[in-house]
Length: 476
Ligand SMILES: *Cc1c(COP(=O)(O)O)cnc(C)c1O
Image (cartoon, rainbow, N blue to C red; front, side):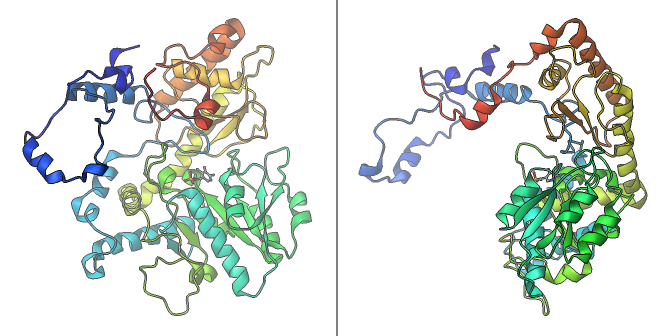
């Protein structure tokens, strides 16, 4: 272990300190803490110099893997590179110093940013109106489902309590429906990975509020029957919800609004230039077709709009403004022409990897994919090497693992999404490493089974770390 990788408490040295304002007299006299509340011994804080702190945290940051340090092909996540200039633009003081409660007349620029963004998102998705209030994809889903429920209730149709969700859906879909008080019914996928329309037929009746779909779906496949599905769901009185978290493959190519979707959310923190991962600020704008605009939620700050019948409020203010600002900067910087390249490049990169590796990895569905695709483990099933082993071995070669063991349709799922931002050279080197690992799995499986061997920590008990985190330092 490197010295500065130790816990900060282990670096502690009595009496050592960083910078201090020398005015101790002033500090002590101004505190005025009542005697009975004052502590009788000093808090157990690490005593370290400024240099110790800087090195410790810089070293810790280097133990992490991020999209700024390497290729990160996590499927269903869109871990693409986002231009740093958008961060700078969103932190311009004239925007970052605004307060949501300041007078409207002094925030006209920010309001124009919001209006423009809604206009461009409407143009890209084919929807009639947007709210920027939701702060994440799942928050957008909940908002969209609230609108769906409001629509039925406002028409006096009280019996629609079920939402149809495909078995390949992102886990947030059934979770959001449940949080919204709706009952989830699952529709099966066909062997070709698409929604089984015959299975859907059997589910449609007057208790269905709508269906949630992802298209291209979570296997990266385009739901070719979407128009037929839209027709069926609409004619039974339900609405179509589109999960647009990973909008990359469609941007500039096709619009959910034209496919018959009534409601959708986008993840600005996947497809529109806010980096994601680690739970940073996100934004999940919700767009709706014309007949639902009156049900868009309102912020408590908004003046009531005559004729509107909002589905409630989902944010005390307007949403994560800086994330919206980055999305607008991104769209404007690409411009009308280049924005049309996003989808085709995301699709080309994914298909290139799929075709280059399908002789070494099991490809259960061989169609042209969109932005992502799924392998079902190694082609050579005679080795004991699992998908987890392959994922860990990738770290030794400086690549982050793809999504593994999701979707649940395949036992050894490896889900790869290269995104549109990677160069041919990066993608080629990833392909080469994946081929090397497949060879190692046959010739020297122990190397793969014991990976990673070059990372600061080896295989961890990931479930234990999540279920039983150790958040305090106790001297042993
Ligand atoms: C990421 C993702 C979500 C959820 O978005 P969050 O911002 O994490 O809540 C929903 N659906 C799909 C398909 C996703 O990829």
